[in-house]
Every structure is written in structure tokens, then in C-alpha cells.
Length: 182
View 1 (tube, helix red, strand yellow):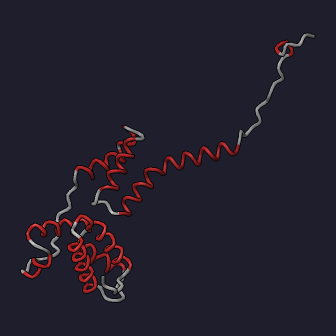
View 2 (tube, one colour):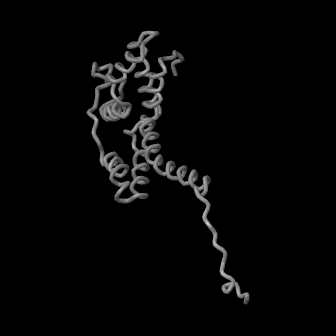
């Protein structure tokens, strides 16, 4: 790996790329990450602003799209071989929503009302197994799914801990119910 440090946003992007590229053979994955690292190093000055980094990352496309392009190139030859032939090595691939991504979004939203427990759980499982969702998107989806449950538990704990706001009057039991005679 190259020891040159990039802007933290660029490093995070490379981390996401490496995670998304787990579907590629190890050598292809390493080559792809190094190729993108080189592209980022060439495109960013040492004191690059967040906006400059964001613009370059946006121009590259999502890590999932890059991996999809690399996988497609793998069928026709390695990225290095295609680059040597003059073909672009990082051609953007149009983002396509697959069935798992659509079902995940529907389950996380509409599924909460239709199947209150199973819908969101199915949505989270599909989101976490999808390579198209970034780690931060998965964390946000998980947080938003469990936020109402956590809020209800905390609210119940507050009301339980505070006790009744007014003491409940206790009336003495009549003597004839206690079995005592007068």
C-alpha cells in the first residue's frame, strides 16, 4: 500500500472502495484501490479543501459503481491491461437499483406499518447485505429504525420512575369483609 496520506475524506472513500471490492480477487482489489489512490493523489493538492475532495470523489462515482466497472472489465481483461490498450480504467457505470435495495427501502418505510417488527428487520438485513449501501447509510438506517423503540423505552422508564403524580387514596376495608363481627 502507498504510505502517502490523503485528505481524511479521500481515505474514507478508499476504505469504502476496499470494502465494496471484496467481491473481486485479491490482486484485482489491490490494483483497483491503488489505481484510485493514485488518481486521488494526482487530482488533489496537499492542502485540498473539503469541497475539492468532494468534487473529485463525486466525479469518480460511488465505490459500488467503480467495483462494478472493474468487475465488468475483468471479463474483458484486467484494468491494467485495458489501461495499456488506451481504454478508460474508471468508466462510470450508471447506478441501478436492484431488487434487494428496493425491498430494503420499502421494508424500512412502509414495512414499519404493514409488518411492524418483520418489515424493518427485513429492511435492515437487506440494507446491511447490499454492497450499494455505504456503511454510513447502513448506520443511519439502523439508527432511524430503532430510534422510535428506544424513545418508547425511555419514555416508559421516565413515567415508571416518576410514579403516580397524585397519591392514590386507599379506603379502609369494611369490617364485615374482614370476617370480624361487631
